[in-house]
Length: 285
Ligand SMILES: C[C@](O)(CO)[C@H](O)COP(=O)(O)OP(=O)(O)OC[C@H]1O[C@@H](n2ccc(N)nc2=O)[C@H](O)[C@@H]1O
Ligand SMILES: Nc1ncnc2c1ncn2[C@@H]1O[C@H](COP(=O)(O)OP(=O)(O)OP(=O)(O)O)[C@@H](O)[C@H]1O
Image (cartoon, rainbow, N blue to C red; front, side, top):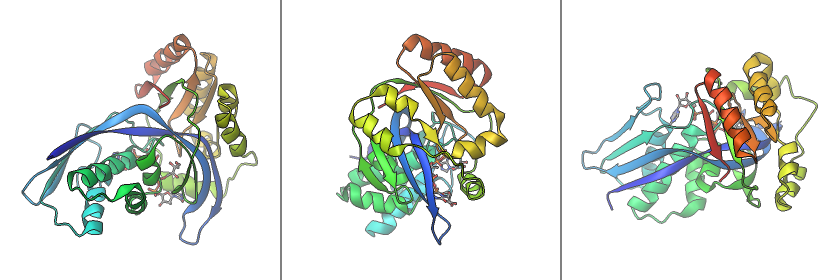
């Protein structure tokens, strides 16, 4: 096999709590992560020119060594000691960028999975997660996907029962947010209200869709929404169209709503898309 094409799915955070800060500047978290249908297509092809080249259909995504997919390939060859014969990586980008949806992390995870298959290294998920963690805190989750409780800095993963199936409207307003800046700001602005992550895990165990929707909560929203009125505006539109619950994902600014009713989801999608072009109608995976 010379080439492999994978779907690299985005994630949303059903809950997100920041529980402490480590000496290296990273924060400890406790959050429920969920894969959604929205995905990039990542194609990895062996070549023989000794180079790692990357193409992407979005001009604002870096194509050099700053791209997390290229960094993932370099980390794979460093870990295995294999000599890279040459690689061509192509990313068809559908996930909004710098949006709180782990877009770069999921591309990196896809490249690690593709290389483990293409080079028949059989590293397995645990080792891929170790390599992934050197690239970013969200990469181990992206390797595993599904519904997970994430602790540590995001890499201590415990599988949870799959979330009840529903539609998801994702809306990214036209500005980007730096994850590092949001973590830095939250040190000074930790909200008093914290998510009920234990309750969220229980709702998932009981397949209680309304319990899930009522517990959506992200402490980072307090930081990002204060600076950007669009987050409140998007939430208001989602809820006025009949979303069963709504929250910001990750460090933002993407804000999402969960819907049981496809007509309400379509109405929310149409209204938001007219104001914010980077709006997507997808589903819980
Ligand atoms: C906000 C979340 O998306 C929630 O899922 C993640 O915690 C972010 O994970 P990520 O984007 O993979 O983060 P990284 O690329 O590893 O880190 C970017 C920056 O965010 C901060 N960071 C990230 C993760 C974490 N647990 N604590 C942190 O303080 C650090 O300043 C770091 O330099
Ligand atoms: N493959 C990639 N796809 C998107 N952005 C990338 C990629 N590689 C590097 N980047 C850079 O990473 C930055 C953050 O983009 P990304 O979409 O990963 O953010 P994010 O969704 O907020 O991540 P997270 O939710 O993990 O914090 C972008 O500004 C971009 O320059």
